[in-house]
Length: 394
Image (cartoon, rainbow, N blue to C red; front, side, top):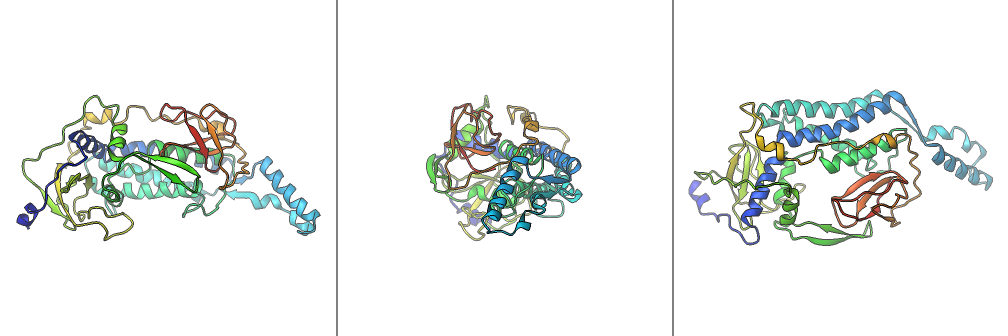
C-alpha cells in the first residue's frame, strides 16, 4: 500500500502560493482551537441569557400593541364587509401569543452545557469532542445552537417555515443570534462533517460577483486567496508550514492515523483537519452528497497535540485581534416587530441612514456582512466601509 501511495502525484502549485499555504495552515489551526470554540460558546451564551429573561419575565409573550392594532383593524374591516362573522374578533389577542415554557429555556441551556463539556475535554487535549460519537460534545453543541438560529431567525427548522414568535425579548433574541453567527459562528471548525466541505466544490475559487435573484442584488464572493488574506490581515508574521521528516500518507476511505492537518496531494491541494479513526475524505466531495469528488492521497503535515501538557499555545493570543464584546441588546427589548415588508420588495439604505425597519440587513457587496438593526437607528459600517444595506426580513 505504501508503494502505491508514493506513485500518486504530489502537491504542486498552479495558483496557490507558499504564502497562501501559510495562511490556510494558520486558519486551520485556529478553527480547531480551544480559543475559537470558547468564542463560539461565549457568543451563544449571550442568546441563552436573553431566552432566560423572556421565559422568566414574560411566560406568555404578546404581540406588540401597534402590530396587534393593525390585526384587529383588519379583522374588523372584514367583519364590516361581511366576509367574517362578528365573533371572529373574540379572543383575537390569544391568537398572537407565544408560550415561553421551561422546556424552551432548557433546550437553549442544553447547548451551552454541551459547549462547556466539550471545552473542558478539549482543554485537556481530548479531541474526541470533534467526532461522531457519544463524546462528540462540540458537534452536539453546534447542532443545538444552529437549531435555535433556525427556529428564531429563519422561522423554522427548515428555514422559512413561517413560524412567528411574540414577546418583549424576541427582537433582542433574534439580534443576538444574528450577531453570534456573524462574529463567531456556532461551529468554529474541526467537526468531521463540517470540515469535509473545505475540500469540496470548486477547489480553487477566484473572487467574483454573483446575482441573487431572491434578494435582487449582486453579492461579492471572495476567492480562496483573498479570503485567507482578509482573515489573517492582522498577523505581523505568517507561520511556516511544517515540513515533516517522514511522509505519513492516507488514501481516501482509509482511517486517518492521527488528528491533524492533512494536505491534498493534487495541484493547488487544499488543507483540511481530519480526525483520527475517521475515513479520509474524497476530494471535491460536497458534504451533503457522499460519494462525489475523487479518491486521492492526503499527506499529514501537522499532528495536533495541543493542550495535552495543559499549556495554551502562545499563538492563540493572536487568533482574534478584537475582544468578543456583545452589543447592547437592551434597546431591542420591547421592540414592536411591525413588518409590512415582503420578500418581493427591495429595501435599501446606506451607512448612516436610519433603518426603515427592524430586522436583518445584508451588506450589498459582502456575502458575509449581516446585522440585525433597529428601526430608526443609523445603519453601521461594514468592515470599516460605507455600504448599501439590503433588508431581508424581521
